[in-house]
Amino acid sequence: MFSIIQAAGWPIWPLLFASIIAVALIIERLVALRGAKVAPAGLLQRVVAEYRQNGTNEAMIANLEAQSPLGRVLAAGLRNVTSSREIMKESIEETGRAVSHDLGRYLTTLGTIASISPLMGLFGTVVGMIEIFGSQAPTGTNPLQLAHGISVALYNTGFGLIIAIPGMIFWRHFRAQVDGFVIEMEQQAVRLVELLHGERKA
Image (tube, rainbow, N blue to C red; front, side):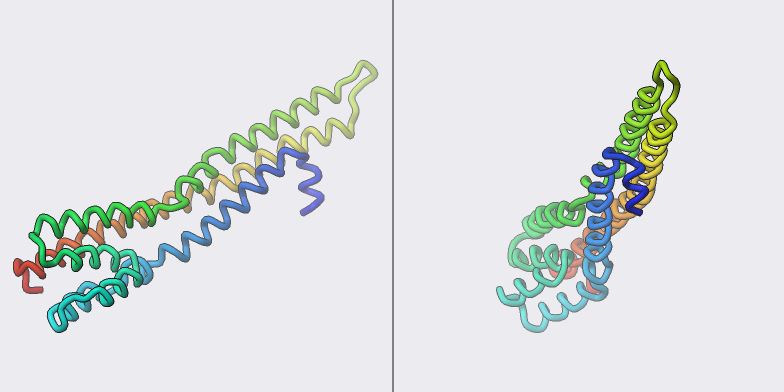
């Protein structure tokens, strides 16, 4: 591995740094965007049952907020359950926007890395081409410098693509996942408002 890095030259170092960041972000988002962690199954039913049995209190709302992003949205509704339907919906929408922003955390960085990695690889290719042309001398071609220039050009191009392809795949996957969670939380929030305001029974 170290011999490959040496053969690729100094342009490989920014790509290595970008790959480390991308892997860290992918692992973090895989952990953070698990369905059971974002929108636990049956949470709305448990919240409604507890509200009908015991009403609301600050401890119950704070505990709900700490459980999950969906819990934060539902807690915003419960905090304003004695207000009108419109105010309750507004508070849920405000919290929902904040939760949606948090779910999309780091995705811009991951998308940027996926987009610029081929360009960084192309930059390494240009550096390698410069070294190839630099190997031309009046007395002939320097084979070692020529080989090194080719290595720099090819390794950087390949490494840039290795970073970009999985980075783009995971970025698109996470974006679709976040969109799905946002829609699910909107539906759950609407059901909460309708259930607590007596417009639906279940």
